[in-house]
Length: 234
Image (cartoon, rainbow, N blue to C red):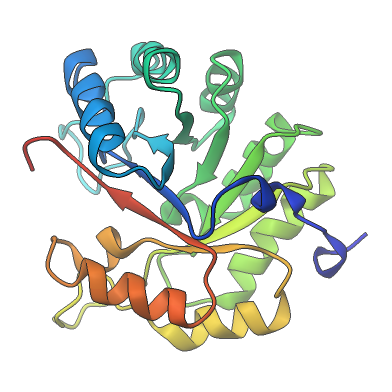
């Protein structure tokens, strides 16, 4: 089987467009529950709650996430508010902990996608899982790396796949934190129209301004949903 033969029927169980929302980083149980409560009260179309448990940082000594304790907070969000849950995994230890906590959707971040060794390690740890696995585009504008990451997952018999377009790093200053480089994402969609694509406007914009317009542009282009960072006190 190759990528173009995947059915990816998992997307059909979600309202269209599929919306994932929640804090960039889990900070405390109270922060998680308040965010979930406010999303539930005001955004009925959100079906998945996301939170970063482990956070890769450019430099050491920054906040790199609360670690596995945050998985208990995700469980509590699911129990109290009925959301499915999602988090990023960057190595085999993250995968084991997330699977044990029954996180519903896992994603591979842009800094991991760029490294085939890392993707292979994650894929082998996930081997045969029926969880949905989403792959963010690599930080650099390389379509082959993005496709290769999915092929590594499929090679481990992981068949519920999707991708996240979060933009690409650039040294030049623009109105975006990460240049969307729409053409690369559209080339991916052209080659693999069967693989659901979500937009990540938070990483593209870097602030709340432009979120709506970037998300709308993606939906106009046929994206299946969005993953948006949400916080009770941004």
